[in-house]
Length: 425
Image 1 (spheres, rainbow, N blue to C red):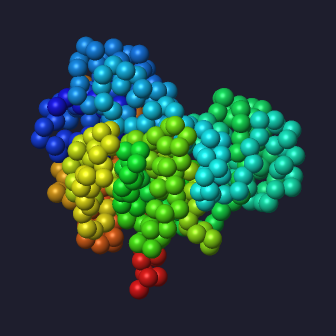
Image 2: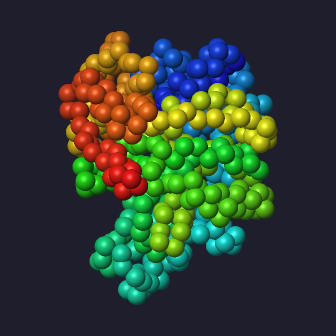
């Protein structure tokens, strides 16, 4: 089989490695891929948002299946365009991807169908939003409606911060048109859980839960990032809570999307808060998360391509999706200064990996045969083990054998999860 993989980060590298386990996969074209994916894929210099070039490529290089991984091309209709060109895809249509590309749509969907989430108001007028900020409970959460590279959510700890957040989005347009509408919502408390799920529009098969670490510095301090590390499974996500989520969130969401004429196929990501009042949805993503994918897929026992095709074909209910026992940890090695200013172009030295280890390259390019840093999050060092402590220790051991100048990582990935496990004893 010939596969087309859209995207260029660590998530895509993890997907690539898992797809490669299927012996029928002959070639994977990565658009655009990255320097670390070369050798495992044919990297083609076509951007993930250049859908016309993508369609032209598959006309000249026929493929059997496409995996569209990032949010932008999904929101822009990459699946629709590839389907029209005769290529079956893993991923939702643009209409279904609106569950992520418009927070207003997602919040209104949850309200209409009784899916638990934070109370909220929607604003298109700056003065009305500022007036609401003067009376709403603080802290509050201000969200830009559209996609904003994961940075369109501000938790305001004071009215002054809330006013500044509203003005930056609606008046200063720091996220462009994504801030034309804003959602101002109730601040929720409790452990956060990420649950990715396979779905064919009717059946939902949750993946192993995970815990992300968004802040740049140890102790959950510093600026928000795309994610500095993950562990899986998340110890807060018990079988009892999983059943509540299936009954009150997962299945109702899939049924709601079908009822709205937007059946969702692919990977639907549920960002959850386990509040004192029960699990509630913080956000939906219309694709695999990054770096959650880097811990979830190493624990997948079943063949990824087979499961992906089942979501496309509507046969997920008849397809076995099995998971390995144990735990996984991913430690992200970033460039010092991320997520603001950082230097690039440093050579990367990679070690040989053991059977329970994997290195997922994200921000790197290859120059004259040398792999060099080319982004904020450079790579993820992932390891699996029978225990969470074992997975964490192994991931840090692997990270310690990887070298490039300006490297930085958090030293406390998994610490909260370990404390939660200790609390269960």
